[in-house]
Amino acid sequence: MSYISTLFPAYAEIFLLCMIGVIMIADLLLPSQTRTVTYLLTQVTLLGCSLITVATHVNGVAHLFTGMFVDDLMSDVLKLLTYLAVSMMLVYSRSYLIVRGLFTGEFLSLTLTSTLGMMVMISASNLVTLYIGLEVLALSLYAMVALQRDSAIATESAMKYFILGAMASGFLLYGMSMIYGGTGSLDVQTISNVIQAGQGNDMLLVFGLAFLVAGLAFKLGAVPFHMWVPDVYHGAPTAMTMFIGSAPKLAAFAFVMRILVESLQPLMIHWAGMLAVLAVLSMGVGNITAIAQTNIKRMFAYSTIAHMGFLLLGVLSGTLDGYSSAMFYAVIYVLMTLGGFGMIMLLSREGFEADNLNDFKGLNQRSPWLAFMMLLLMFSMAGV
Image (cartoon, rainbow, N blue to C red; front, side):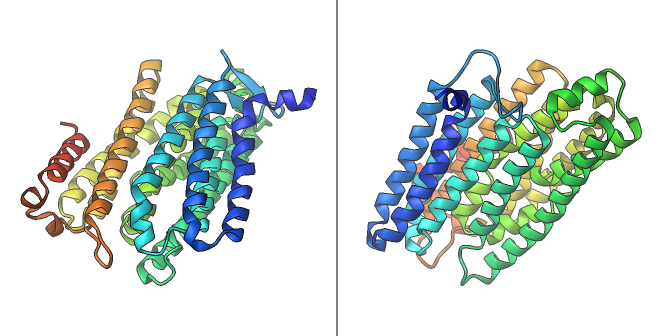
């Protein structure tokens, strides 16, 4: 009983893992006509995770599994926002997926599995735990993009995403191995303490830091590691694109905070310059290239690249206010993305994707309310 009580901070993850199994079994046993049952189970699971996260919140910081898992205010807030984003995605995309035959148990299971990966990333306090959470998320996203098996462009996007994602994972692993070699530890706090005490191998640390930043830049979609973003956003079904562009960005923000701020803060003199270059390039290339796009999903992709540049500026500040602003920016970006892709799905129908700018011509005459909402979203993305 005492061991079970020590798992208190991880109850939400354990509950989600159990419910993934329940939903998969229910989907196998129930006829396809009753897919609503698994959908409702998925939403109930997210609600249950939210309640458990609130109930298990502790003041201060709680560690679990010999320091590999941490429960603090940032992790709880980001988890609650992640549940909300995933739930909104499911509500927005349900009709869209049903029409296209993609509203399956596999989709719902992959959605929850990727959510579990995000939760692990958000609460990770060890480089190995961070990597495990990242791979659970990434592998689920690869499979989601490829769910539309009869679409050549979706299959191509999934293949590109998988290959480039594997390369980025290799960068991260190599960087983590260098950090371990330079400090003798994989624990986030221990790494910081060793570097502050001047006991680390500086050459190994800077070398590993470069690979870590490259891997993080890929996961964020920052220039020059952004080439996968437009292709995946364009090729994947809109519902999957909405998911890729929303909730995982919250987990990516947590990833950056755990590695660069909590673990490698003493090396800020080195990584600040790298992030500054990535931020400036992302803002410039993202905003300029978005102007030339005629496909709105590709335009949103380049907008994402630009927004990640602005997000990195908050991390670059090195202050608590800067980190709080970056987190707030990430939350607003997720809401904008959900709204933007939600509008595309609302205007799409069977056999037709409203993903070209020409498809929005005359929208004010056809549906003034939708046109007004789209205008607000575009102004929000532009920072007006």
